[in-house]
Image (tube, rainbow, N blue to C red):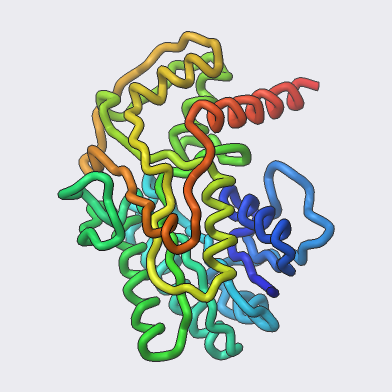
Length: 309
């Protein structure tokens, strides 16, 4: 299958591209920048451009059989700083993408949503896909709006979408600037001998999924003919206190914890029920937390050793 991967040079996208190539698909990537942590892959076609550039997106869609939409121009921590930008670039940008797809007779779309933000403060744990959507931050609100528009296009225009609500992915190639994920951020602080900064008292519970497990599911689900919404996580909850203890075990380093006031939009517990993915696709996350942390730490150490040579 000829697949366009929007955001294929990013953290999750690069692993999805790897999974799709292993499955024998022909890949075109559209992204703003080249990959940060490895050279271009010889078997992949690259198109560099901005997701908000309608002409560039339309050109990238031409000749494809499916589109994997993994682009987000914001993160949960940055979307609240400029909600108008979040809506303008991500919601309107996705509408423009769908119009370009339909004009090019491309109906198959995988959209990577956010299992960590769309549900908000939940009534039950773990959370299945039927739980009401009550996002309390801008990032989640925009994701829910995109999901709603995709359903409208499915009903009215023949779009064939499958939506993956991912939990909190971590692993090699994740940026560590403090906006993309606590695992990469914490490990980067540890490797640099800095105090680990924790927002809140460390009791917040999240569902952490290793990125290659998530990528494997995206490749499997997107290339199928299934539609609908599927959670993708480990199905296991880990508090920040527990995560930091695991990081001490993996790194062999003691480090200072520095606690700061929790954000007002922080959800106390988010753990996904992924039984629908297991039932429909025979998929479940296979990598346990310690194994995933060890591989991520080894990758970060390799980067740091390389920078000193």
